[in-house]
Length: 287
Image (cartoon, rainbow, N blue to C red; front, side):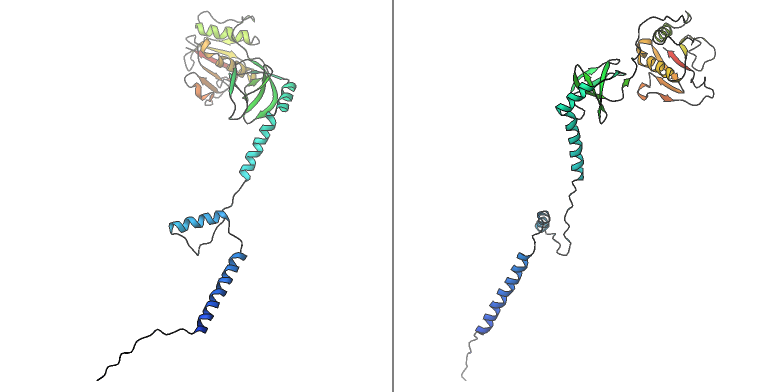
C-alpha cells in the first residue's frame, strides 16, 4: 500500500493583518511618546533616589515619590548674625565706637583681650584685676568691647566695677586694733581691711564657745558690717585669701572656703538670728 507523506508548511499571515499590526504599533508609540514629552520632567533629587532604588533592586512602583523639603530658615538666621557682626566690625563702625567711648570701669578679675568677639577672635593680650578700662557700650554674645591703647578689644562681659577695687597695702588709720595674742594672719586681715575700708570700726576676735573653735584660739575675726558694704569686704578678703592666710569666709548665710573654692559661695542652713546667719558681720577664719 502506497504511503503518502505530507509536508507541514507554516501558515502565512495575510498581508492585511501585517499592515494593521504595524499601524497599531506606530500609533501606540506615538501616544506614549506624546505623553512623555507632554509631561514635566521629575525633579533631579527624585530621579537620584529612584535610580538608587533601581540599582539595589528595591524599586517600589506603588510607593509615592516624596520630594525632600529643603528649609533655608537656618541659613538665613546664620546669615543675619554674620551680617550683624560684619557691620559691627566694619572699620567705620569700630572707629566711631572707639571715638565715642566714655564709660570708665575697673576690672574685677583678670581678663583676656580678644581681637573680635566670635570664635575667629585671637587673644592679643590680657588685663589685670583692677585695671581701668573704657567701654564702648557695644556687646556681642557674652563679650563686651573695650578700648585699650586706642584699639578696640573684646573681653568677657560682667567683670567690671564702678569703683576701683580695694588692694592690699596702706595703713590702718582709724584707730582700731586687734589683741596682740591673735594669729599673725588675723592681724594681716585687720590691717588690710582697715586700710581699704576705714569706715569699719568694730572687729571681734576672742570669744568663747564658737562652732569652729577659731575664735577661742585667735584664728577668727568678725568684721561688723552689713548690706552691700559687707559683700565688698567679703569679696576683698576672698580675692586676697592667699596673701592673708584665709581658710574660709562667712557672710549673709553663705560660705566660701579654700578647699571648695571651685563651688563659689555656698548657701548655709538657717541658724535663726541675723547674727547667727552672719547678716551683720563678715566672719573670717585663717589657718
